[in-house]
Image 1 (cartoon, rainbow, N blue to C red):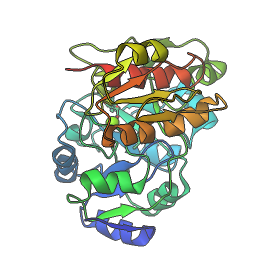
Image 2: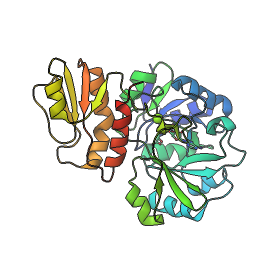
Image 3: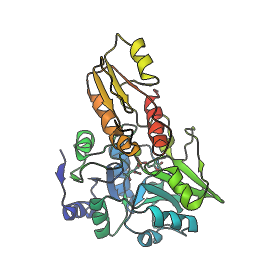
Image 4: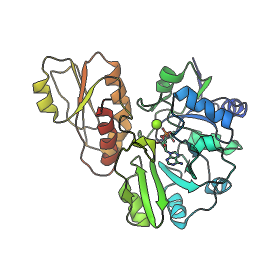
Length: 317
Ligand code: TXA
Ligand code: MG
């Protein structure tokens, strides 16, 4: 079992000695280690059981600190950084050779983020290196939004989890990058597309899934719980599946006559819905239901990222 503790100096000592730790952020918890050492990064892939073609995000505390590791910072990136960092936005930038290939899976760009979580920021400020941190879940499973989730899934593989309470945003960061003159969204996430467009104009959201994903958050079966999950019209599905022990994850309305009914946001608040999404999915997955049924939320604001996660959770291999 990992020690769960809010002492950033203890976290620093462990990281400086090349250990991995659980690391709170406002989006989801990360599995963090020194991004500049290939042998540490290699442990991250191993502990997560993550394929090496899926690169990691580097977490830092300032744009100035990040500038040591990149060739240049385009003006649009500067504008986005100014508007949204610290926050749930990851920006792809051309890296220099201080970052090992393994961290970025050999790609020319590296992904950077300044998280908004106060504990995460205080820790990053006292470290001499950015932290590579994928979400702290086994590859392909639901991302963790509190320290207990990390303990349950990776607690026997890491010595320490930095306590940081619940992740306020609840879904992973939005990933942006620049190709020629275009701004591309590679993963919908905790920062709404319309907010990005207000700062730098139209962006292109890449459609999901391909055999060679640009950002493997795009792999279709990502975020899947172990139980089967069907996305559709909940009332219809309840009628069709009346022989089965059902769990329901709905947007705003709760359902009777099912084994478990969890609501994302009674008041239809998208931020609340995003915050609840992964922990509710996890509760349903851990319950005794035989099938999870769910529905899309309105496709506005964070609703787009929520639907993206639900759609992928519902795909079965
Ligand atoms: O909110 C978040 O982004 C969380 C917290 C811990 O910061 N992290 C996170 O990491 O979601 P992860 O590893 O679960 O997802 C990172 C995504 C992956 O799909 C990865 O492929 C993509 O970012 N990515 C990382 N570096 C990239 C790069 N150089 N080019 C394209 N995609 C990249
Ligand atoms: Mg992940």
